[in-house]
Image (cartoon, rainbow, N blue to C red; front, side, top):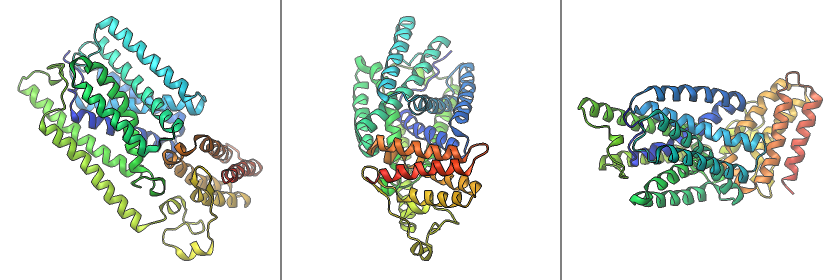
Length: 418
């Protein structure tokens, strides 16, 4: 086989960072917005990942679209593994970070013992390819755990996280240019792209009230995906032309690190400028049309004051102000909880189940902005919301059980104001 991984250039790193955000937001979309839930989403992603890796292993040379499809799916799976340990099993981020660090060290140790190198310039045997993808999956899991630990334990937030992880990434690129540090710097940079991509994505997607640009997960994902497709298509065309000209595989030319040709830098810069420029334009337009975006986005057509621009209804029933001592303004979520309570009190459990979906989507979308402020308070409210969701989504929900779960949610919400 020829070398089955791409040459590491600026374009490589841009696609890698963007794929992290796309992978994470797409998994959240399936789980929350589509309503598949974490279990079904995890199972579906792992099945598709297995199919992609089988396809990747069956090829005899580097095929850009197959390779990057596998990377996106691995990014989703690595994130899901960490989230499962943290959210479902309650494993501390300190423990999971240490666990994945040890696991990655074991993968590298066995890989080096078998092949006497950790370089990616000669991934040209099935065994080396297996080690490579094992390391890739572990780096995503480690990057997720370490990134979450940093932003939550240190309360960095996505803005500071983007600056810190971005700075660390640039340092690794400098070390990557040094021959003696090349392999170690590459893998360090690969780990850092996971929290960096997540922080940049959160900066674009989070609401203005949370310090983001307010672009939203869907628009950000579409923009990022469009840039990825363009860059991968360009790589595919270049690879095909090189093979037709009977040139050597660019991925195995040399082990020398490179930021790429001037054209690579130009395409990478154009992609970043397009995302930031279009994202800023769309978010500015959205903010101008709807200043109260958080409340409007979480409202419903039949809830008091929910429709954007319906000032008469909004003034007639002013939503209560709920401000947490640590999490900040939670009024937009309180609006939905009030609606769910009203529907449940009337015995309309089907309507309450439909309305609480808005709470789930809005709470999930605001996680990156709220959680770093106070992880403990966020988890307390998150557990209460999960309890209400479970009660209303039960096979045969009863009004008494739903009322009890909503009372617990209300109590938790009030405690946040203390």
